[in-house]
Image (cartoon, rainbow, N blue to C red; front, top):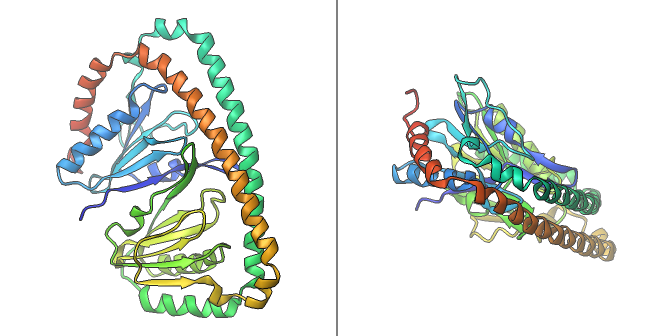
Length: 357
């Protein structure tokens, strides 16, 4: 059964907005960057083109917006080597090699500038309020990140590293045989803290995979396993997608090994992997159980405090989203969506043309 892949390229993290957009577009052979305001139909346009691609039998990856997961920040059709992305804040983008690789999709001609100018004071005020709320959000996410790092530090201290390394070496030897080809790596984020809570695209992990190996790991210790597997996979010429933690983007959480049909992922209280795996590994087998029991109260405190702070951050993001809806209303009222639809039909034909044409 076909499962459309879904992911994020940008998230609200402990260090502010974290983006993988530049890395993503620089790997594509055709890039379409949309320029336009909020509520001007960018997401609707991309979703429409994505559905047309699916109707033509093409696999589509939908790249969601972490500030509004119901909206899209981009689409990617691997078979065509083509992507279309929103190039507006907080991920301002310019098309690489304009005309040769990159193209601008300009929404500006389809709005009534006089209507927008009439609402300029309100538009500025709403933008200022939204910006201030995002600053507050990042204070909370920063605090939650510190607690998560403390939890990870405890896990590292509890871990029997030689035992963990031995397990990783056996996994590498079993699955990651040398390949006579150049390695390839994509980077994604499969979960994000959004106005709707922690959204996790878990179905993407099992899309096209024969085997799913799940680490049950509350601490983040399994990231050490994943880093070693990533290093070995790239050294041996495999094609992988590395997926990172939404709060601490430097922390590796999942790897999809496309060429061997294997996914190795992490399940914890922030995001449960409920798919029936062929193997489920409790990270506790690599920990000092007695020492873990002695730290039980502190571990419980860190998890509770982190989750309460994250709930506050999500609440602020929800307020941001309400204000953003008000902002979008000014732009929607100024748009000529009928003319935009005519343009979108021509754009779809260009975007969906076969690779090399």
